[in-house]
Image (tube, rainbow, N blue to C red; front, side, top):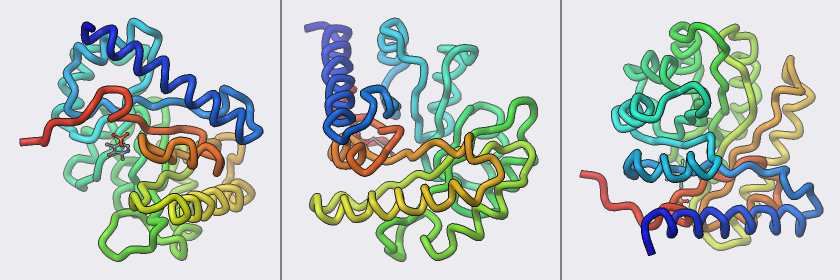
Length: 233
Ligand SMILES: *Cc1c(COP(=O)(O)O)cnc(C)c1O
């Protein structure tokens, strides 16, 4: 099979999995979006998916992403940054991307807000759902205060929450997903534009069904679509 045949077969399988999981959860079959995670993959892979109708990609590494964005263009592709944010990269992130999933402190949000021009930048707040000290993401305890502080920033559009739970067993994962979903529904009544606070970025290759059952509206899928990643040099 050619690379194109492979990718299109994987895409078809994942789209059916997402629809099925949504229906099984008693939801509309198109109520959860697929975000293909293309980190470490060549622009030629993204082009194959683009030709099959995909218009959003998730990237983790700034330099690599900027190169792909200049190769593939920006006009009708939504670029999502899902990697760790260093504060000296906020300007380029605010200029190059449409969505940032990994905002977990006010300092970063303020810098993105200052650097952004034009359309507001779509922001998700990353939550540390496992409450583990070593991980990024705001704690559930500090989440409300952070959301309240980000909400009025004029060049950001606060769209929802995101998590990267530890890949534990399904009981723990489900509990982590349910905690994030609870926080999300609670915050929808607190933010200034509830209609825009519509995105729960939760679920990856190994927990996509569980995440959809717990209310995910966007699953970030790398391995199941592109195959294994080579270690980054
Ligand atoms: C790499 C990555 C993904 C994709 O993970 P897979 O298990 O390969 O589907 C999703 N989210 C984030 C934040 C990632 O870094």
